[in-house]
Length: 124
Picture 1 (tube, rainbow, N blue to C red):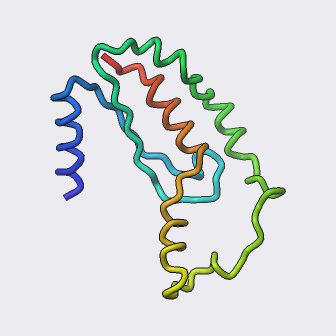
Picture 2 (picture 1 turned 180 degrees about the vertical axis):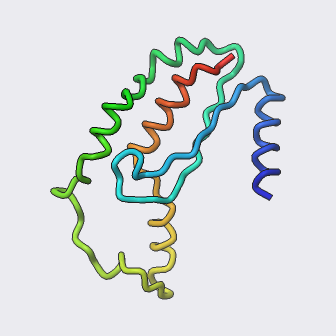
């Protein structure tokens, strides 16, 4: 089960001296037109300086700033034209492509996840 996998991963990291934080984030939480949730994990060795790590990653925006960002329309100027290979009709030729599209993680999601995880105030 996935619970067993998660427990095993976290226990292995802990056994090797790492503290871990994880979260789920959805694309629409960062203004992207996607609703599938993604799981992000950050593991920090217990000997690492959390303040040094925080100095490398900007703090997440305030709730008000985040709300303004999410309200912005998706970048319509660079929106690619709808083409046949984007349609939801899996065929032998396009099924791998459709699977890859469904597993996309946009950079905005990764950036926000790392901001939230690095600046989590629960690090030991």
